[in-house]
Length: 625
Ligand code: F6R
Image (tube, rainbow, N blue to C red; front, side, top):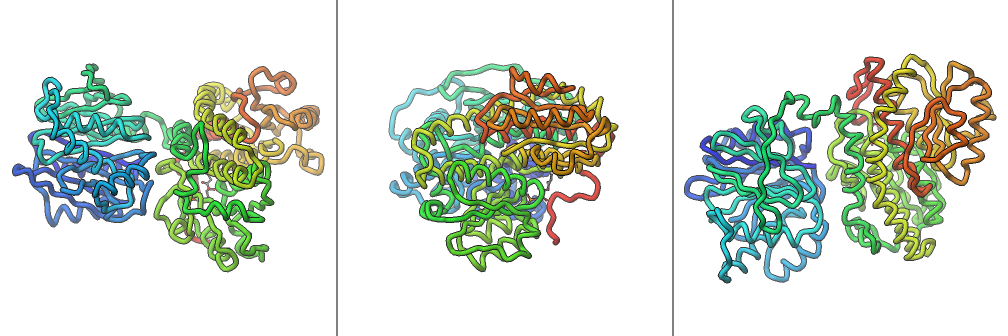
């Protein structure tokens, strides 16, 4: 989830680009860069690792002159955060300059193919393949007489872009310049947001409106598979087939802070609503209808390790630990590997039985959590098989382990983790499925059918998000309660823990997650009319047993709020409120069942007037013990 900006018009471009990048810094911030095209066609490229202020310092020393340019703030997906990997990227001749947001799924094969044709790469990014592919297509089309698309000063560039995007698989929004096409800027969208700001004989490009809000409120949002060709005089839209498209611009009413949050009240709510996308992006290119364990290559994790390991330890803190607990169920059920999930701060001081046949999976959104890092360092003394599941490429964790499976959730700004959790669950499901297949626990047919179900999960989450008004209604009734109990069984148990954690940290209400079967061993003593129970009661092998546990709670006066599947009768009959989630295979149900609990915690906190994006006493990244 990087930030893209572009400008073409009468003004000096670099201050506008820099200003736009600063406004988009919330989208990504591990490195930044820009390119300005001067009058003589000279392309000045400046790039820097680190925050945008580092780039700003470079610009102060050497301000590039020109009235056309593009810029980028990066959130690494392929390749560490560094100057070489910072955008813009160029082709071999340094005439094509591109900034890109998204993931090119087939970058590996394209890179190999372009390499055999003599292209030389100077970064580890997937983006760079686009520049070389475009160079190749320009070269090829130049030698042919090609029809000219109407109204275009540089039809060759347009046609080459059209050819290029057809060869790319994945999600991309990009903007680009070509030295030989003066007064032209091209913007392309496929499955990643991109907007064009319409000024007075000037145009702005950005992945998000805040970048150009101070200059114009008239916006054209590009649709998927569209190409915008901009000059200082006009903005023309085409689809990937080359057909002209016309659309009325919208006038944006949001203020800057609303625009940064995409119109949502809080980053947390925006991030909850981004979850279908977080799952899609984490699955992208790693699984498909004809699923093969191809992503292991990207993981840099030898398939032999997944085949051979005799034990897995999953470590993490808070929400990441809860993801680890879900991972334990997944790995045991799908791959038949004995697993332990543990809080990193405990693990580091035990003497866990690790040997060379143990795999340690460290889970962390930030990759900077001190306890998780210490657990990894401890484990490294006894096993060399370590895998990180992490959202921040280039973080300390990813540098300290040999293999990382990146969760492509984009930056998470709300302190309470939401979309990163879904990314972690998705990544763990991928590992468990592929380990199961490699170890002969899952047939190719089972792997394929699970993969198909997994690909449907984002749609299921979108359905759950429609329950938000119902969640709000319940929160208005419940927000004065001081204690809540979350009950569920099996793989729902960690989701109860996570639901309770969300409620605690956001609304400061005391909440406990319990495995429902454990109730009778003590916690049932707590239950009376003042203790509502949130039940995760979707269909599962243990549904009937859970019904019995819930009856015991209701008999003692508990008010029941239940998460159920459509058509549920037994639990619904006992519940004061129900929230419906679509029925999915039991092992995938955490991915949808957590969503109403996140929304519930959010709305409870809002009703109580709490600061949802920055709850008291909490920090986004806990870098001390
Ligand atoms: C809870 C939350 C924390 C983090 C924990 C680990 O909403 O955000 O519990 O999950 O501090 O952080 P990471 O994943 O960055 O290691």
